[in-house]
Image (tube, rainbow, N blue to C red; front, side):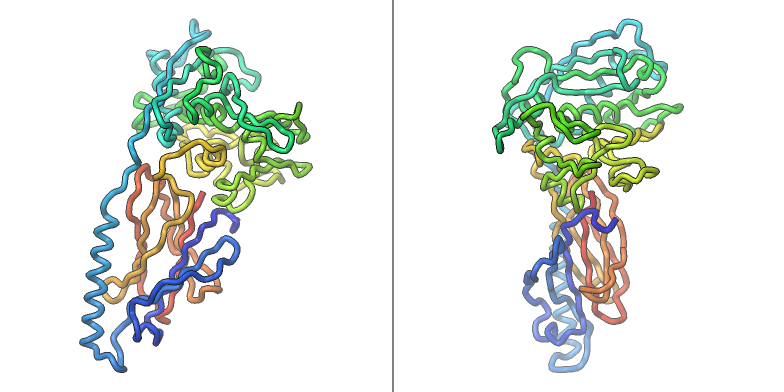
Length: 422
């Protein structure tokens, strides 16, 4: 789907343009935006040739420019790490644990806590509260309507009145955001697990922070399960009816306030998520509730692309023996709901830098930010057919320099653009 992901940054390298020979380091300038695409025009390095500049003079200019690019690369090489996160502590109460079993661990209470904390921190590691927070968790082993499990905040907190509607946010989100516990000393959130699902389906990671052990059997990763449920606790929740688009009253969650019903399907239109995805994000309507995204590929519903159905908050299915993690699109939902995130998280593509390597290779450099994936595309014309050059699936936890190299084009003119992918 071509609409997925925007925030293009495009650089133009033309090594045979007369303007370069007048000034090989021409000033960058912004061109008018075309929809979601931003284009930047810069002049790059050229090969030696005839004219007022001798080959020797041009070689000097090339050496000087390469020296500058080397210094820039050294600057990129300094790893950028997110600021130290303020601690969010979890305190536990168990209900219904007596008689519960799981064959993948010898110490079920410890495995539940360690895997749950690892799942919750998939989210909280990127949150930036102003001071430490303490979240009281009830972990309940009890029959669940879907036969799996669920998670939610115990209460909600009033945010504002908008156009006659009272807007609320999830209680845990309110506490993380403001430091004020909306229900005092009572539990803040509940995660329920069906005992049969716990026994027959969940796999507990012996080192849930590292997440490298092989998942055994036809089982679902417990860290992924807890991370998914904490997404509902924080942001993916509301009162809208998945089937008919109705609401029970004149109130909405933050999530509700950014959704729309087209008469058949739900969409999420929060500005950050929409910009990253490239359109309103299709929510689940076939095999799950609207507080998820994506729909089965076998259906005719929107949202059948892998970005959604393979995401942490997908409403299609969790595959066995597969780990799921918080992605940039998931955090976009938090940004839309005004939960402060680490400034290392960016929802726009970084600037590209172009250089010539060894006189034969074009090199494209950028600074990748945490959880971000990028695609480099190239064309011989800025308004021509774009072809994928490479996909950087980094999705690392720290900012790091990335680059792509290819032989210089025979035409000596080449356009590049960088796409931030959800």
